[in-house]
Amino acid sequence: MPSEHVSDLYTRKVGGESYTYTVDYSLGPRVEWQAQVFKDGDLKGRPAGVLLDNTLIGNSLRQTVISLVEVTIENMIGIEE
Image (cartoon, rainbow, N blue to C red; front, side, top):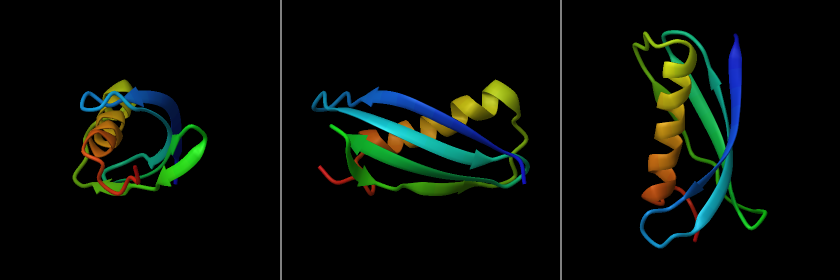
């Protein structure tokens, strides 16, 4: 199954802490994504999810997956402090 990879930095709006992350995601109608989130080089969480009935491709899909990861970090869902 084809997949994509993104690495980026996110700074929380509440608190201002910076986290780096990598996320791998599949392409197609069922998008499965798995991220690794780090703070100061320490693994803080491995959030993951599924986007069902996907019709997005290219940059639109990439931005959607990035948004999902960053919302997860912002709300500290599955992320250690």
